[in-house]
Image 1 (cartoon, rainbow, N blue to C red):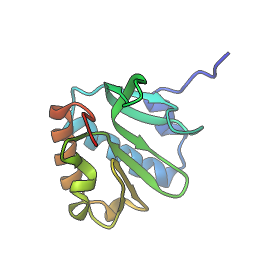
Image 2 (spheres, rainbow, N blue to C red):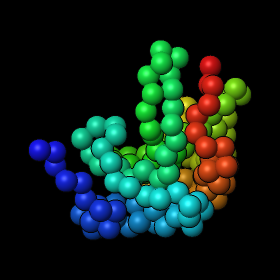
Image 3 (cartoon, rainbow, N blue to C red):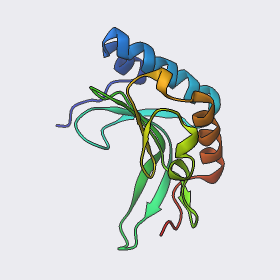
Image 4 (cartoon, rainbow, N blue to C red):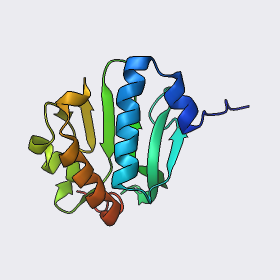
Length: 141
């Protein structure tokens, strides 16, 4: 029988105090920026739970289909990760805007950082709003 996942509040409460403050601040910023994207705790990328906001339907070139979160917040153990899963024919939203996001390591749709002060939260929430309008990764080559 699969282990029952915690609620968002339970996940936040279970974090060490220093990490709880950062993740709670980010969670509130995400909820304010994209209030229509419902949060849900999931284990999509490994054993540690994450908070996913909204979802979209994807289909890979091989024909595999599934649902994925539009925005993801991963508390992590050493780094924090924000995922904004949006792309189109011009590439991935995070990757195209990496220089604006602060002292972070950015991938295609992932933003990794060690402390909240390293992240330009205004720039990130602007991307989240754009992501909500776009609705997921579509036809990224």
